[in-house]
Amino acid sequence: MGISTLDDLTVEDATVGVRVDINSPLTADGRLADDARLDAHVGTLDELLDRGGRVAVLAHQGRPGGDEFAGLEDHAARLDEMLEYPVAYCDATFSAEARDAIAALDAGEAVLLENTRFYSEEYMEFPAEEAAETFLVDRLVPAFDVFVNDAFAAAHRSQPSMIGFPPRLPSYAGRVMERELDVLGHIEETPRPRVYALGGAKIADALDVAESVLERDLADQILTSGMTGNAFLEASGVWIGDPSHDAIVDRDATAIDDASALLEEYGDRINVPEDVAIGRDGERVEVAVEDLPVDQPALDVGDRTIAAYADTFETAGTAILNGPPGVFEEERFAKGTKEVFAAATRAEYSIVGGGDTAAALRRHGIEGFDHVSTGGGAALRMLTGDSLPAVEVLRR
Figure 1 (cartoon, rainbow, N blue to C red):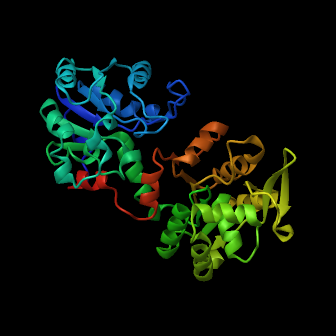
Figure 2 (cartoon, rainbow, N blue to C red; figure 1 turned 120 degrees about the horizontal axis):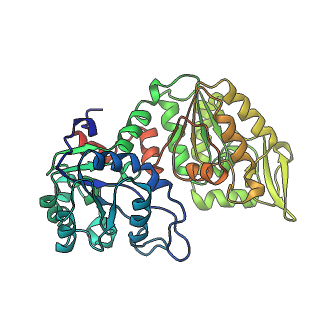
Figure 3 (cartoon, rainbow, N blue to C red; figure 1 turned 60 degrees about the horizontal axis):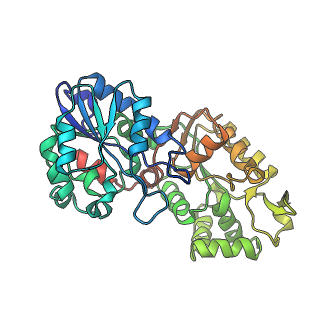
């Protein structure tokens, strides 16, 4: 990778600043609703503490103005339960109080500092050299001996806590970061045929992935579903009806034209749904493509599509999933997600691109994948061949 990892770090008696991404869903009263993001970093943190480090953890939760913009006291309490070593909480990030809390750590102890995004600098993006001079970084550099970045899910952000420390401190990739880069950075080495299943409502993102992997000959087949599949359906000449059409255009005004251009160039490798599921009188109703349009939005794929996509996965060397096939949060429209994703596990090697896709797996208890990414946007950037600022600064 050209990046130093924990294998290269002498931890004993070192004070280690560790950036993690534990940004998690919260309940209405601000408590943790899902600790999957925390669990991902347990290995890195336990290893650093077991090797005698004093660990100060940096993290964010939500974004200013959002419903899930909150402090990290509950996160610290949960980490304290999950780790083999004690984790304290500090209601500050880079003030004298925070630095005192770090200085008071003994070997094998950790403290989670307050939400980095409580400070305006952290919600801005900088070149690495400018990030290194921000207040957050400048105040914490004297408190750390080394820096470890394990926050792959935020690696596409050039915020101070992500890219400001490597110009000033010896810096390393944590185990989550190392594992993500090892898998997502070597897609071209995975077994063929390589099948990408692109769904969800983030149509522009899915189109970017499709264009990138087809142009670079990384994909042998692309299976489209969700709102992305609806866009490809219409681009193929099928009128799907006003509700689905309007939903597509509201999301991305050029999506249908962009999908049409991809079909024209790579149509033999792009699969569109053969049927869709709609809601009518509170029930799930499946409609074949030849019976479209309908007066209800298409919210899932139907049995014919599920069977066709499952057959494709049966002979796949690698399955790569990005975006759920349907509105998986509603049980009657979760069938496509559950069955298509379960079929993908039968490929020789299977990768999940994080974000909503990983959330769908957790919600429905779908297991058996070789790699489930912790990052949505970061995983997407890697799948499209883009660089990640936090990774590039570690390389330098």
